[in-house]
Amino acid sequence: MKSEDAPLTQGSRRAAAELARAWRHGARLEGLPTTGSREDAYLVQDEMARLLGLRVAGWKVGAASPGVMKEKGIDAPIPGRIFAGTLSESPAEISASRLPQTNLESEFAFRVGRDFGPGRQYSRDEAGEDCTLHAAFDLTGSRYVNGPADLFEEIADNGNAGAVVVGSGREIPALDLERVLIDLRINSGAGVANLNGENRRDPVGVLLWTINSLSERGHALEAGSYVLTGSVTQPQPLELGDEAVARFEGIGGVRVRLVK
Image (cartoon, rainbow, N blue to C red; front, side, top):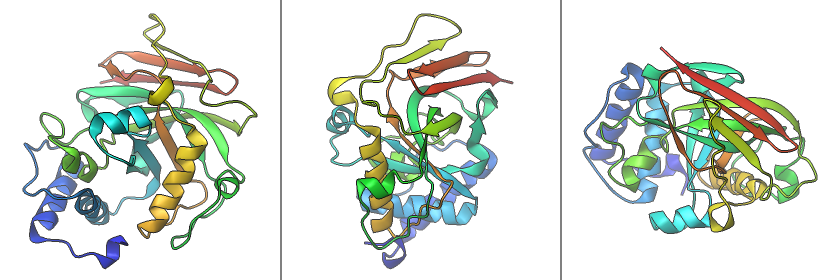
């Protein structure tokens, strides 16, 4: 069902308004005044984004791997918007005050090279057409004091979106992206474990799923938008003064520092 075709309940409207206020003013919520299905949560997310009126620079995808979906008890990933003001190019400095209790995830990002309009399903070849591939960081964020209490709150709050940092791009290489090694280090410390097996998924497949999922919901994905495809390293807490550097084998690197 397209977002514009589904009615919003009074509780969902209140939830969207509270989330929009929290995004605008950096407020933290104890929770939302309503709950519902995953579809209801996306309606809240969409209404929150409408109220904010911010330009969307792309989408981030959480719970992209079979292992994480199994852990959460869901059968599909969780997309959330990347608002333009939360997207930075590497090397980046980001205010720690914007991201209390953030976790950092290393991810493959794609910058799409064409428009994907709603109302149809696309092929894998179409999804990769004129794309560039980037090393990226997803720094999670939450508008809740103690994080989301359930899946409804997580989806409604833009899938825990916080900030995104992208490195320089290149054409999609002839590599098995599920096996590319990522050397992530926090403050030049020991390398962080890569995710493998059922906790990792082909990022081109996630890109294709995202394009088609957005199309089903009635959303367009414009040329130049980024799609982040889920963590490929163990999520790491990041605090004021910390610097993270990741090098993706055969692809490139990305760097971020949390500052005052």
